[in-house]
Every structure is written in structure tokens, then in C-alpha cells.
Image (tube, rainbow, N blue to C red):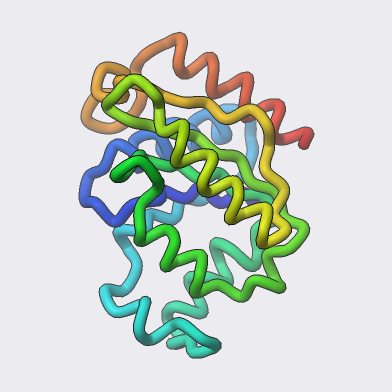
Length: 172
């Protein structure tokens, strides 16, 4: 299974809309995927699930979406020139030994014109440190507000771009 991670805890985020588009592409190709939205993390996960501690609910969540998956797609919104702090806290809470050797794909999005370029560079360094291989094709979705509607991406060229990238990622 592939886990698609909407990497923000913001409600009704653009990231979740991009995640749903990716899942639709996988569904159309009979590829199993599931979405983890960080908005569904327990509010106190940072304090109760760090430094080797884990609550049963959190362990179940991380096992389902992270331990049992071999591939991840991180939808990364740009926050203050980098990626969201909740994503860093989430990554810090994981069992890093169980993550080594897995593969990740990154999709950056921003309302500006750089498409979260720096955020993708920053998270790539963190994932490489954890021995997670990162696919080289990293779409940067600039002006995201113009590419989506209330639920998903509607821009045809962006969808085609994601289809090509996701197909390549499957053989990565």
C-alpha cells in the first residue's frame, strides 16, 4: 500500500485536496493507497508519543500508515519558507529504524510562485538523513488556489503532470 500524507494540520487544506487527486489517480489505475491527513493527529501527540513513548491509538495510526507502507507521497505546503512544523513533529515521533529503506515522493504547493521549492529541499534532507529514498521528480504546484476547486485539483495539465510523476514513482 502507498500512504499519501497531507502534511498539515490545517482544516480543509489545499494539501488534502491534492492528496485526494493523487488517490483518484491511483484508484483509476487499480493501485491501493490511503490518505493520512495530519489534521487527524491527536492534539497531544507531540507530548504523549515521543522519545519512545506511544499511546495505543497513535501506535495503530503510525503502524497503518507508516510501518506497513513501503512508499509515501508527502503533499508539502509551504509554511514560512519551509514545511509545516506538525510534519517535523510527526516525523520525529516515528520509529526511524522502521523507516529506513522506504521510498518517498514529494509534491510541493504554495499560493506563491515557487511551489514550495525550499520546503521540498528541507524535507528531502530530513528524509535522506532517515535513509528514506526520495524520488527525483518533485512537482511544485505554484498558485495552488487557481488549480483546485472545493475538493480536488481541476487543472487538466496539473492532473496530467501528476499522472506522469506517479507512474514513474510506482516503478521507482
